Image 1: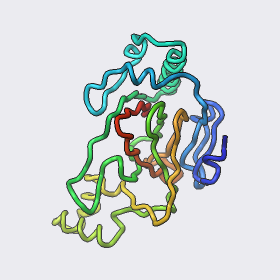
Image 2: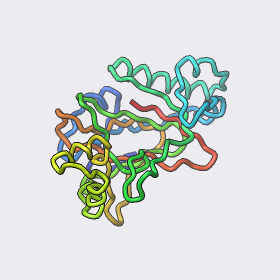
Image 3: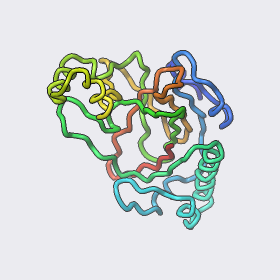
Length: 232
């Protein structure tokens, strides 16, 4: 089971939920995976849910109301259990049925949407948890495989033109507009796909973090296929 992720020195493996939440990030490890081969028919759940907009939050009562086969019921119980585990841990998980995220195409030289490789930032000590139950899964890369876009000279020059203000306020401008969170991947880098069914914990940029934040991106969705994603 470890072959998929063992080539990446940034990934630690957990065998239980307790391991996932209690293992400290250290060194290069800024992503932890509770690797699971889930049983159940998650496609049946997706087929019965109704998407209201590009992102529709699905609540436990929505899942409970579905009339499912035995396989569908197994999948539902897995999702409900994951939601309960994370809630009891103190997180605020959200289950989303996704058609697509909003695109940022305002500038042709830099993007700040979730399809761009980026890190998450928080003012408090927290982590990002996510699990894809159905559809395309996110990618991660190690921090040595990318460069902050704001440090690339040609991009930085264009951002300074865009800022058009006092130089001492430039760094504030970059943070306020989230430009500093986005990364350019080096040539010939093969991202690690997070796969379906595994519950991940990714390091976030916050004042107490002991490791570099995990660089990740949302996947391009498959045509005509919704994603079912737990995230918090």
